[in-house]
Image (cartoon, rainbow, N blue to C red; front, top):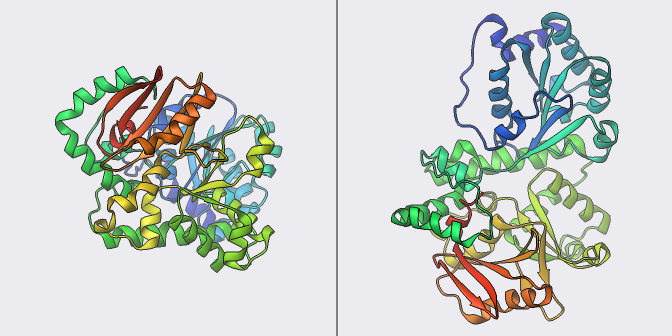
Length: 431
C-alpha cells in the first residue's frame, strides 16, 4: 500500500478540511429526506442501487449538512480496493480529524469490509454511511452487521424526479394509489398540460433512469452512456469483482435476452437450452443481475410460498431506457406495439397473477386488500382486455382494480366493483 498516495486521495476527497469546497447539485433525490432522519441513529447507513443513479451525489449532499465532522473516501480505484487501505483510511480519519461521520463510497469492492466496520462500530462512537452498486445486504454482510446497519435502495429516477430535474415541479402530495377522487382532483389540475406530460412520459421511458441524461437530447449519446458507463461497467467489472464469473459473455447475453423479453414469463430450464449452459450457472447469473439491480423478477401471487417458488416467474429490465440502449432502439422505434411491455416494466412489482386458464394480471398490490393492476398502454381497450382483471377481483374479492392506460381516464363499476382507468403519466405522479 502506498500510504502517501492514499493520504493524498484523502485530502482530494475532502477539500473542506482545507477550507475549500466542491460543487454539489442542488437537486435532491426523494430518498434524501428519508435517510436524513436516520443520521442521529447509531446504526450504519447503507445506500445501494444501480450505477449512475446518484449515490455519491446523495452522500455529498448529506455531508454538506454535517460540516467538518463528516469525511469521505471512495474505493472506486483499483489501487484502493484492499482491506489494509480501508483500515488506514478509517484510522486516519479518527486520529487526524476526530471524525464523527465517515462516508465510504463503493465499499463493496473491499474484501471483508463488513468485518472491519463491525469492529469500529462496536468500539468507536462513529457513524458510517456507506454505498455500493451491488447489494450490500448479501448474506455475509447481513450476518456480520445484524442490527448494526439500515439499508436504503436508491432506485433509478422516478417520473416525478425526472420532471423536477427538467424544471417542472409537480407536488401531488400523498395520494393513495387507489384513491380515485384524489387522483381525479390531480388530473383536473394538470389537464391543460396533458400533452406535455404525455410527451415527457415517453422521454422518461427513453432516457429517464439517470440524472445526467435528463437534459440530453442526442440519442446516440444516450445509448452509448447507458451501454458503456452502466451496463458494461457492471457486467464486465462490478459483478466479476464480487462474484466468480467464468463466462462474462454469457452474463452479457443473458442480460440482453432479459431486456428483449422484459415483462415476459421465463423458466430457467428453457434458458439453459437457449444458452447451452447448466442450471446452476443460469440461476447464479440471474442472481448476479438482480444483485446488480439490472433486472427485477416477479412471482405469481399465491398465499403459498411453495406454489410461488414452483411457478414460472416474470423478468423485467429495471428501466426501459436500459433495454432501449442495449437493443439499439431509437426514439422513432418506440411505437405502441413496442412500448407495451416496457411500460409494464415501469410498474412491475413483487407479484403478478396467472391462473391455469392463463387469465393474468400484470401487478398485484397489497394494501388492506389486494388491488390488481393491468397495464394497457394502447389507444383502444376492449372488454377482452379486462378478462384477467375481472377474474382476479372475483377470485380474491377485490373491490377495486386499476387499469394503467395510454390516455383513458375514467371510473367504471362492474358488479359492485370499481375499475379505475388511469393514464400512465398521471399514475406515476401519485406518491
